[in-house]
Image (cartoon, rainbow, N blue to C red):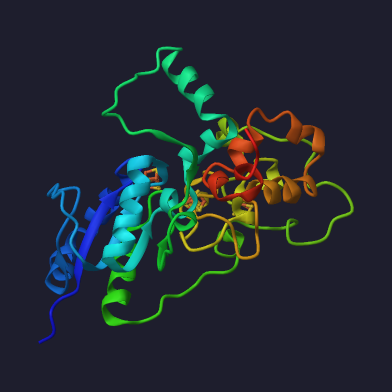
Length: 290
Ligand code: SF4
Ligand code: SF4
Ligand code: SF4
């Protein structure tokens, strides 16, 4: 019987949510652990990284330590998996790329920035794992679904290829779309409504048709529309749909055709809405001189 594939996991700048999702494999975890030889994980806190078949990294590359681990894991792993949206696109932490790093630190620490040589140094920009080293497999989601992590690992073990999603989330969203898919001469709705008004909205009808911003148009399918089926608009955590470069730009572009521009301008944080998870992966923001 051939040796079991060895697996190592590591943490970059993330929140541990993706690795917690790995633990949510729950009932199927014992069977998975029969098939793999799980070596280094943040749970056993082994410091050494030996050569492995599969390396899995959660989190974005935001510090010098992250960058070092990303290169080390790439060197040691035959197959490198970017686990979760931070790893795939930079995630929410990537929003710090809107400001120079010194300004971010001063804002957070109110001018009293810690100055200890033991602390990791923040990189000027948060980066996705893929923009630092070659990634072989991505598992999207903030956090990814446990079943997707299991599916991915099983596919890697058995050598099967994984299904690539290419359509947008609206394709799997069950909310009724009476107007959004049909060319209109006018706007779909007069104004933009806040999510706080959710109790007054139709829970079965497309959010955008009711003036509530939803990123489903520019987000790839695959999550099973887990927010919109629970009466929350999509914020794009699975990242851009196929052919969408600049998820936030495309989001504004798309909703501008459906809603009056004035309504969108009054949104407090349109960049943080459209680019909530993928700003670090957008070349427009990240090639900018500081
Ligand atoms: S993708 Fe989401 S759950 Fe995973 S590390 Fe980033 S913030 Fe946490
Ligand atoms: S815009 Fe949002 S609510 Fe409307 S169909 Fe697409 S995913 Fe569903
Ligand atoms: S509906 Fe959107 S925000 Fe929610 S899990 Fe799916 S992709 Fe992520």
